[in-house]
Structures are given as structure tokens and as C-alpha cells.
Image 1 (cartoon, chains in turn purple, brown):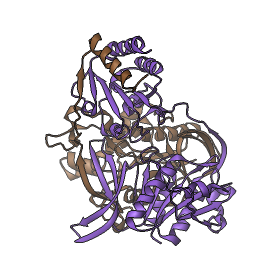
Image 2: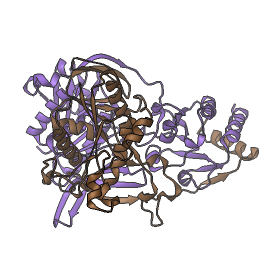
Image 3: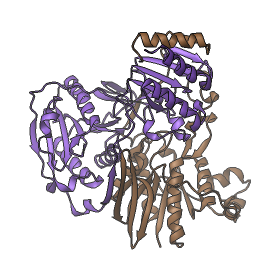
Image 4: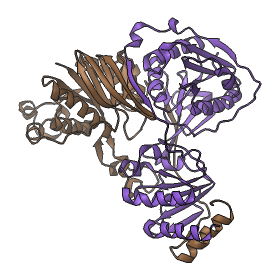
Length: 339
Length: 288
């Protein structure tokens, strides 16, 4: 009872990466709180998944295997999750800030009247004092996220309502297994016990899932462009440099919003989090949401006209000037010096 | 005939944060940010207007919760084709998190009554939470279709919607009523219509009339369109579930961003300097 529970996303035969990352974080939170780590997997054809899930140190694995639970639709998953949480009363529920998690999380939180914080960049355990009410709370979940255009970082708590819910983007937390021999206690749920006919009102007619052509997460060098790149045409310079260095091209939200490149290249709080060996930021000013997605890069080079761009503060090298001049020179001298 | 409610929010334009957006003490200068119609709420309005194009007797009501000045976006929506606007405003709503906001909106939707379709933007740019749409749907006990890119068809109270997901697309079908959130890839909202602009430019809420008009009679004799304005009591809401008190989430701490400055090496655009940087990166095996 009052454990930490991770809703694990199941898609095309496997659990999604973000869920494993959250299980890893969930394990460390459960250790701090001295409670158990639970996982909830809903879908169809789940046999055998328990082995992989167990490796992350899950104590109790709830599984509901039912054709009405796959592919994901909102109401059936809400019904089972809400039904289970009303019985098990988890103190914390974590889910991915994905198409699914951001659709399901708010529905569950409304149904249970519990607080939910979206797109957290960090989760910690700590205390909270409500000075007005003169109440002190211990062992609350700190849900930490940038807010208001990235000018501030807010720590959100849910003092009274349970579960404390948070969503986190893929790549923000690190994934780490605990043991290959650990076995979670497996509890099968009967979906029929929770589902009503009216939960099936939304029907999927067609579905096309694409695997992304962009592989930012596993790229050791990233060339990222911001609003300062200026145009879609100028982004070609970045592609050229990326091609030469064997890198991938990323972008800030401002560049994506301006239509310079595709959303799937967006790095930051509402995009992808990356940890490359080398991050070359081109015309990126460095709002905190962007920084949140790349601050663990081993080395940062900032190419910017503006000597005072905030991103320069975390750059190892700052090249001041125009991209149009600098990038061709980088390509030229790379080719000249590489054997 | 379909009855549609479009949820909209007036937001600070966080996409265009200028240099004066931060005050000297490092806090956010909200006054320096222009207030705009939340972009994806405009996509939602366009989806509603497309339905009205097909079924002209459809009635579109734009609903917003916010301070008195939020009536600006109601007028904006009416210029573009919404039939009516409702402003939900009350000090009791101050400090609402997404759940308390959703509760208040759901009360207003019930008061408007019998909506077939509720449309909203996926998320607002000042918070990016994407929570209010699904939470309103839950409070109303109706299904939701999030991330709508296109309404493929609507016949006999059955709607087909194309959803834009992170890694693909999905076409779903549902019978009304349903709440739909619009993705930024949905069609852009049509511009203002000149005739509608003339008709609605003096549309105001009672609060606006009281602050501008000199005498009480003039306020009530004003022939211009009156935008509906409701407070918490008007929508029969339970005060306990509103505002800060009705919000499960509390802000414990807010920190301004201070970057830990690294020792950075500044390089000019000189050929020699760029060549030596590339040589250094190659020798460290960072590249190559």
C-alpha cells in the first residue's frame, strides 16, 4: 500500500524506453520512501514482459491482458488504472510525457482529484511547510519543471491529495537495471472487472505508426539550430556540417515554431533530452527549456552573433560571428585535418 | 444543428520574450509580454468554423476563464466567426491549477448547456501542460479525442477525427458528445471578417462597460452586443473546488534561472583559430 507506481506504456510488442527510465527513477524514490515499486502494464499479448520489467527492481507488477486495451484508447486505460489505484492507493504515480501519458494522466488525475505536474525535468523527495495552515509535510514528491517561458524553475508539491502524479519526457531520466535475477510479484488484473461498455465509445479506424528517421538520442554529435539560424535554407548549412561530422541535426523550439525544421528534431523540455559528446549550438539563445534538454552534453560549442547569449555561459567554446562564415570553415578545416 | 463550445485562453506571448521581459530583480515582467489568443485555441476555433461551414445553423460559443481583459480574445473570436462569447471571471478562481480550472470550466459548460462538441487547443503556451482538455472531459463524463489534426467527417452525430501522435497518425471515430483538443498541425484559423468586425467591435462585457461608461443608464442602454460575463456563483460552482484552495498542486518554490558560468574560450572567425579548434577536437577524438 502507498507505493510508487509507474504506468508502463506498451506499444508494438514492447515496453517503451521512457517507462524503463521512470522505473529506474521510481526504484530510487521507493528506496528513499521505504516503500515498494509497482508497475502497471495494460495491453494485449503481454506474456513474457515480466522478465524485462523485473530487471528494473519492480516489486509488484500489475498486468491486464485484454484486446480492449490495445491499441491504447483513453477510457479503457483510465478505467483500469483508476479502478486499481482506488484499491492500492499509491502515493506516487509516474508516467511518460508522451502522446499516451499526456492523454491519460490528466484524465486519471481528474478522476481521482489528485494533482498532476506535466513535463518534469527532475523529481526529488523533500519536506514542505504550509505556513498559512501551520502544517508540515514530510516525504513529499518535488515535481520540478521550468515554467513561464522558461524564465523560472518551479517546484510543485501535492500536500494533501494522492496519488502525487507527474509526467516526464523520454530521455530525461537515466535507465538502469538493478538485477537480472530479480523477480517481481506478478498480479493479473481482469480488465472486465473495470470496463463498462461506454468506455469503448471511441473506436480506432486506422493507425499508422512510423519509426522516427531522426535518431538524436543515440547520436554522439549534435548540431542544433535556433531561431538565429534565420531560415529553412540556412538550416542546410547545419545538415552539411552534420553530414561531414557524422552528426545529427537538432533544433530549439523557436526554430521548430518558425518552420525551419521538423518537430521531431526539437531538443528541450517539450522535445527530446540528449547527452552527446559534442553539442554545437548554432544561433541558439539558450532559454531554460532548451538548456534542460542538452545541459548534460560533454562539450558545448556555441556559434552566435550575440556575445551575451545565455547559452554561451555553459559553452566550452564560443565562436562569435555568422554561421554562413563559420560553418563552411569548420567543414573545410575538418576535411583538411582528418586522416 | 450542432451546438459547439470552444475553450480559449488569453496567454502572455512567451514565444516572443523580449529583452525587457525580465525585471532588474530577475523576476518576470508580465506587463512587458503582449497578451494573445492561445495559438492552438485558434486551431480549435477553425475546426469549429469548418463544421459551421458544413452545417450553417451550428452555434459556436467561445468560453474563456480569466481577468476582465480576457474579453479581448472573445471579440477576436467573434470577428473570426464565433457566434457568442462567455467570460468566466471571479477572484475566487485566482491561483487555480489545471484541475480547479477544469472544474470551473465544466461548471460553465453545464450552464451553457447541451453542447454536442467541445473543442479546445491541445495546450496553452504559458504552461504547456495539455491537461485542461482531458480534465474538463472527465469532469463532464464525456470521451475525449486529443491532438486532432483534421475532422474527417461528421454525419448523424458520428465524428471521425485524424489525430497527430508523436510517432504517427490515428483515425478515430466517436459518437457525440465528445471533447476534442486541436493540435498545432490543424488548419490555421481564418482571418477576421470585415463585416463581423464592424458588428462586434463594440461587443463588451458588463465589467468593461462599467469601467468605461460614465453613467449607469448609458451602460444599460448600450445597444452593442453584450458579452456574457459569469462569476463563480453564476455557474453554480462549489467554492471549495475553486482557486488555490481547490488546487491539489501547490507551488513550493520558484527560482529564477542563474546559469553556472563555465570557463568558455572565445574564438573568432579567423581561419587560423577555427582550424586550431578543429584540430583540437580531432586530437581529443571528440570528432572524427
